[in-house]
Length: 450
Image (spheres, rainbow, N blue to C red):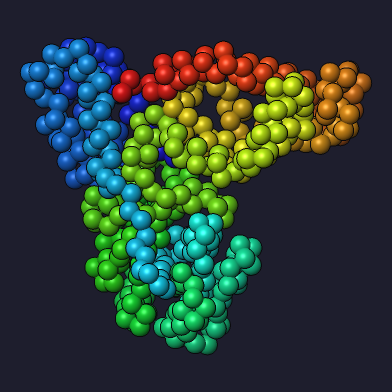
């Protein structure tokens, strides 16, 4: 997410963040590079122009330029301006006391049907009751797709096939959800390959029929500036209450996310960050700004970890570490838990300062295939070998390599990594190790010093 933009901005910012005194020429040069980075990321040119103008207005001044913390001040202003451009604050779904309805709209290919199911799961996981309505009567495959997803996440689906009008399906589905006292009914509507009058007429009819609590436009972030135009067209006709940006994990530039709210005034409420059914995140402008500037996103990382790791399992793991009984079976369980949090690259981009040292890390170590290979190697071991890896000699390595489709060198590399992890965990479980980690975080947690 935002790899290109993050690399450019962190490079520019790093060049001035540790400077003391700055000249107006330094500021102009820096902002020129920032503007170029934004435009290359497909950010709307008016947004880019306003962005750098606002920063310059805030940092140009005799007192600031002569300050020994002038460089850090520029970084802070840039961060604040990014948050403002992204919408300023997180915007929750509007929720009435009783039954609420979300009308999901968008073009074909934006991920609307999948996002409808992802949102349903997200709301269900938060303890709310949810029903889905398959109102895309123009595409039988969409109804079938939503049916499969609804079964997968254990949520009720209302469908009436393709012989009934979209408005009729929506009204009947809405009433069914209301009768079952669902907190939310999510209606998946039809899309088109472009905005047309037929699509908008149909959506207007549905909207007037059910008066939805929320009208969310699902937008493919990889379409860049075109997504801004699509959002404006939908908003002008049916009145949007929020946006969901999908395929954010595949957009290295980020122009849509940085432009869309600033241009249209419509808040982004969720972002899709992967293909998995749980790969939907609430949109937090401050956290995303932090990621863009390479400062990580500790809060989201902590939330993902809390949702993934069972408390009893964590207590058992802590006991094993202290007793030096942490083995390869535990190592395997931890790798599988990490995979549930997202891809390795997604997790690491939330770690403060990682973008600054990304180029120094072997790309193969960031590949999810690396975890798959490690799993295969451990699965090829006997229970005794997993609990006592020190018993694995040359002949056992060859047998494990053959069974896992890897090489003895791969097996040896995994065993060495396991030893390093076990040693690190042992050190960190001590009070001295915890104090050392706190010192490291206080020094390196924020690469820009604010």
